[in-house]
Length: 235
Figure (cartoon, rainbow, N blue to C red):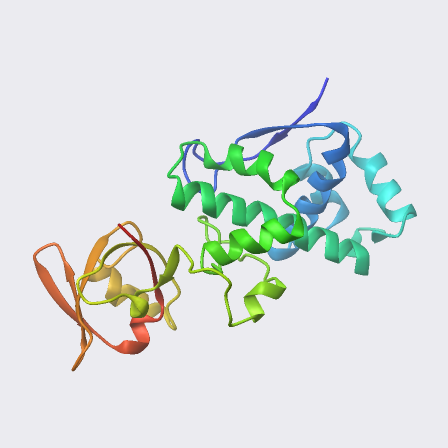
């Protein structure tokens, strides 16, 4: 019987990884994602990996990964070796980009379950295309960072992304805020207090002499730098 990947969250909402049925070839991927996530949280130990992984043969797979040069295990310390680092980064990147796509562009309930399946079929080329299409998002819907790819370092894009900074809109354009990457928490608090939050629909009223956006019946003047931190999708 296939193993089941259990994660915690509210089903149908961002950050809820749901239940993902894993065929044999994807069980190693499960462990790489667990290792990467635990390292992000500062909780990477052998004991934590075993507790977080629901695969029946978790310890055996860990030993095989160590034997084959993917990871290094010394007592409770676990380290991704160079090829393991590369593989884990690619897996997490595919998963979080898939989640971003299903959650933001398609607004699907159970986006995490779809992302869990989709991440295993993306080639590197398609992954970069998805990233470009989304405007190189820095975070997944649950706030976790999306590992950057080569396409993110390229400032030239082959196609116009569906998600772009508010600054790129033309006066009169209406768009839905997808995510915000503020330079400071205080700036994010000010935007939130004005209702400028992901999911809100705004209209760019003017760019000169200052940027003015319309939110419902309210006109809001914002600095140009802030409009570069608000990423939107035209509606």
